[in-house]
Length: 245
Length: 69
View (cartoon, rainbow over the protein chains, first blue to last red):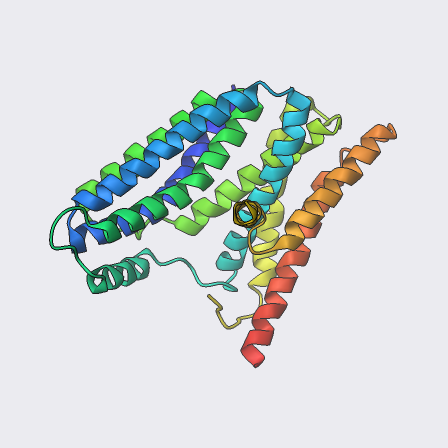
């Protein structure tokens, strides 16, 4: 039960972070070039992602659990540490924070400078929207598939992504502005913590480790990972440094 | 095919290959420990933060080099 809840939360938060970034691009294209082509591009990419999750999710669930946990746990650990690393560097001031308003302004400038077709589909807006939705969505798909398959809960992980989609797109449609107030780096840090903890736990199970306390060790790993991440941020933030993008 | 492979590697490994290398080594060490029958559960919880710390220190040094140049 707790494992499924964590899978749901992990998938929802990871999806929200990526969807906020995609929303910024689609909004910029829609405002500057009209809504039809960007929405078509995003819808096409979403269709590709849904097929990918459905196909790979059911395939992975058929693989023996120990092998699955070893391979996917290792991948999740690498992926989670990358998210955590980036979030810690941003939180400690060693890397510039992602600014949605700045990204929005840059995307609008690029969209207004690009050629416009006299008639028919706006290929620029379609392709940019499709590519950004697909690229950001692939990370979501990877997380949904790996979290879901390992826990035998692909539907629950997918539900987390759907809830995030409804919330982010709903708010985005209402305000028609990038969601720059979303604490993106904090969300990224939380997702990194969860992916790293899940990855550590499952990779360990996959190689035959006996975790003290059994499944409860996952919760302990999350707390431990949060503790050392916080310590790393404090240690790195001690001295003021030049911010590098 | 080669481009697709590079794309997958770039997607999973990201901009810091050290993390992927360290994770593979740590998982291999944990597997060895488990095979030898040792109580090896601590290898990953101890090794993962150590690997990330090394990567963070490397990033900090790179930033400082960038600042001084």
